[in-house]
Length: 440
Image (cartoon, rainbow, N blue to C red; front, side, top):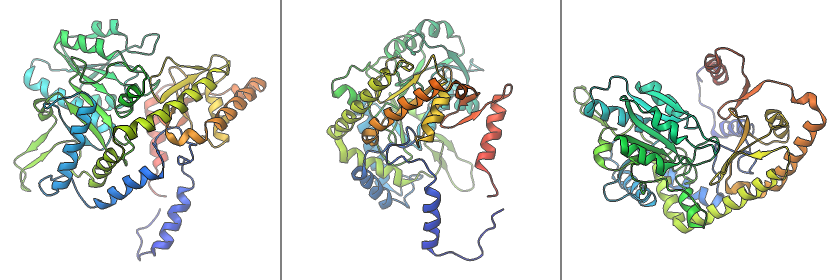
């Protein structure tokens, strides 16, 4: 058990130890990692870092004290509203990340239903099985039942089943743009029509795609409508620290109007510490993350994002074409942007991931169906050819060494483990508990 230090340590020693530990992390800067970090080069990173440090001590908990952060937040939300075809009525908040944005959306619609539909005692939300797991977290936290609908053959929400799943308890429909597992946009326009028909709220989770899909369209690709241009869409979540390339962690949640956003807020008037009101789940909100988002958005502008997106799409197409030339592999569906997954009917895809990890690649593994998942950034430009070579070699090894196909590895979100039969969730909780540790 590590004891609290009696005396301080010089900074050189501390930083040396930190650097040693950092060497164990995934090599994201050189493109060896296919998730978690969105790296667009040192030039943009320096802009984000400098802006962050300028507001390192700033706290967006009280916007009346830090007027600069309030202006940054309003400007960021206004730019996002413009990007997503909002209008003067569009309102929102910045959060710590996609999970918090999703939590806030579910909380908002639960609280709205409590006021407008008090007859609903057990609220439900309908979401495709591909919707982000944070909706399950929100369901658990806020007492909203998650009703799952399947995907069709194109890995999109099944519209026919969606309408059948609506009950008198339904308060919310969820769609993704795109969904994390396969990188495919749900049929948002059709889902919006269903939401309007039944008088339901409709949230589009664009945490992953919000700051790339508009620019993919700009450079000439066909992208289905997914934002406030779609009648029926009542809110959108979009992460600035993903393809917005801002520092971790900052995301946006936007609503059609401020009347909806009001249900997101929390207020408490009887605290001896004074009147308390909070716009989101967190109290303290790091000013550095907000400042970095403001700086990067203005530094790049629409043209800068278009250039980065063009690079991402070029790399993505090169990877997908290379994968498709390997007979044992196939791309799942028709992904719209820089996120995709591939699987196999003839080899164990998780064993293939092991082969790639032996070469230093950090691979996301998924299940239902078994596949490998990739989020492409400009950092992958220099490594796409070497990755395809290692991929081809890994497939060839598995074809000639069938014993390596055996095993029961299964995918976790960003990690993998051998899952036993039975109580999987309990096993996952125990595994996380052990992984995080407490006495090292």
